Length: 379
Image 1 (cartoon, helix red, strand yellow):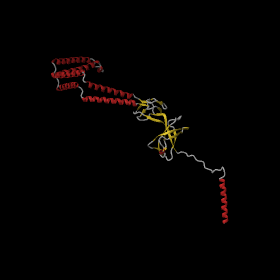
Image 2 (spheres, rainbow, N blue to C red):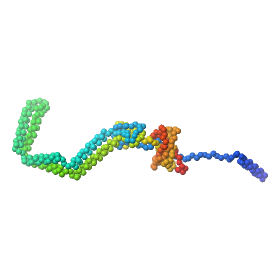
Image 3 (cartoon, rainbow, N blue to C red):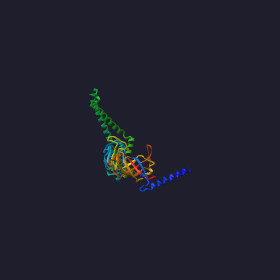
Image 4 (cartoon, helix red, strand yellow):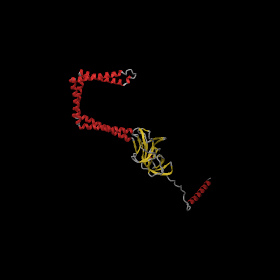
């Protein structure tokens, strides 16, 4: 048994010797495994191509659309009118507001200027007329006035008798009420009643009520003259000034409403969408035209997972490809990371905005894009 053990050890020693010699043979190097290149970690996400800025324009007030002046795909300049409401009613409101303002200013100017000589003359004449009427009533009728009134009444009665005779000649007719004789008799009767009432009033003399009314008219006329001579009070001037300010505010509001009836491009850009046509009713605040500034493009991610957001920094470079443009690749820079998450199907994501650094032929608003952001190990 011992002999077999010694024999085995001898065989192993010989085999080890020859193996050592083989390793030391000239030109023979130990075999090594090829190095595997390291792939830098990246954050990937899908996104949508958009202009560097865009806006959905809407009217401030509801109304019928009078004209749409652009079409989808049109390029417009800043300040260009894109659409307008029917402004006929708004223009009428502005005209009325301006007329009211002119009247208020004229009233204020008259108050500040004081009474005009012609206004004073009119007021003095009204006082004299009221006083004369009161004096006449208190003095009672003159004999000649009574005689004249009686004569007028008798003359009217004579005319009634003549018209009655003419009427009697045709009263047998079925259409007698439509004849000239009937009309003349009716008018003569009315004239007679008026003449008789005037005569009886003169004979009776003025009543206490008539004298009281005349005295009141005198008081009113005298008060109006005194007020005119005294000029406007501070309160009247303040009220007139307030009416002017109110009218000015109404004009400004009407002018603003007229301006708001036009949609104006806030910047030069491309009309991406037109959502209404002439003749339709536009609701206040409802988007009418979507405008984008296509002097530059961005990609806004739609599914960047919340676990990847800590690895992303503003200023990082981004590789961008497009689903609709095979083989086209460009670069961009992260310029904004949303501070608040948005809920998407399957999880929570954050919107990251990537500004493209190079122009891309055939790029269009709304295209699907894919981004890859190289990040450092450990985020």
